Image: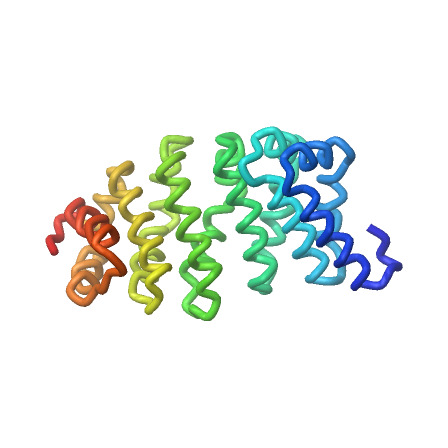
Length: 243
């Protein structure tokens, strides 16, 4: 927290702290010792590297940790990290914020409701649909997050319908066409989850040009294995397309 120290020393301290809080008990102890507001305050640091590492610490604490997630929400941690994600043009910082949000949203229904009110999913879909595909790793993380959330949390405040309204389907269909098999698999899983759980998603596909876009994609699609091909076939059949 001492901004007068050399940046390298501060970065090393944050790196050690991130390893320390990999333990769930240590993460919860960190929350009890005002760790959350301390890390949130570093989002205003002049160094993007310090900001990124602070979010990484919080993200590690939030993974599969319901208790820490509750503490994070009680400390009003969601608005500042969402605001920072909406403002930054740094893909590294955005990626770590997505990592933190992934842990929080998967473990807390209350966080999903709060995130919807903060327009969080607008920004996440915008990141996924970015026309510059240079940061494929961030796109993979986002597609995986959406697939997981829809599968586990689609009924929370009608999340599936909310994501359809935010044009998640358009972003997923667009990214299917990128030459990256890992991203393609995650997009297929996200679409499959949406079509399985949200009638509005099926209706949206069949009543827009997205159906023809999926049909065009299916005619040239290559699959990593038979399992992925089977899921893709099921996904397409749900919207009236055969393979």
